[in-house]
Image (cartoon, rainbow, N blue to C red; front, side):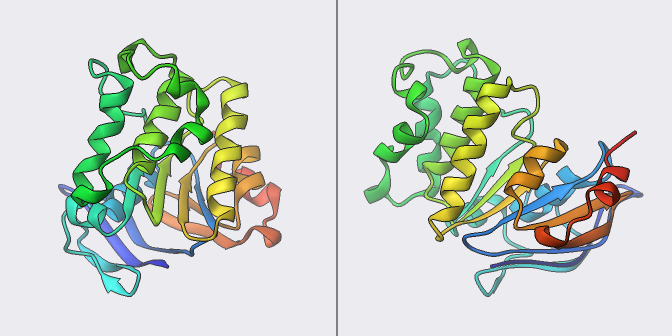
Length: 231
C-alpha cells in the first residue's frame, strides 16, 4: 500500500500542497480529481520523488520513501506516466520502451509480451519514431513504457488529456485489467468525471492545494464532486 500522510510542498515561497493525504492499495484504483492548478500534479511529483516535500511522509510497502530520489523509487516498483506523455519523439517506439530497462536488473531487461497484448498497435510500430505517432498512440506508448518496469504502483497523470474517445476506452480497459490482477496499486489523476467515476475504488478531490472530499467510490456524491471540477 501507498500511504501519503500530511504532506506540504512548496515552490519557492508558494505553497502548492497543504497537509495532503491519501492511500492506494494493490488491486485498487485511487483517483485524484480537481480543477487545473489545484495541486494534483504536484502531488504526483511528490509521490514519485520529482519534487521534495517540506513536511509529512510517503510510505510504500511499509518503507518510508520520503527522502528517496526518483530512481530509487522506480527500483522499488513505482512507475510514472506523466501529464503530456513525455515520450522521446526522436527515438523509435522500441527504443522508447527500452528506456524502461534502467530501473530493472539485467535479467528482466526485455519487453514483456503482455505489453503488446495490452496495446496491439505498438507491435506494428516498433520501428517508427515516437513523434510520428498520434496523440492517442503516444499515450499508449507512455503507459507501455511504464509497464516495462514491472511496477507495483502505477501513477498516471491525466491519461485522457487530448485523447480521442476510442483510445480513452482502450486506456480505461487496460487500467481496469491491471487493477483486477491484484498485484498493482494504481493512482490516477483525472478531470474527466465519467472516466474517474467508472474506474475509481477510492477518490480524493482537491482544491487550492488541499483535500476537500475523499472516500470510497460507492459513497461518492456526483454533485459534490462536480462542484470542484467546474470552472
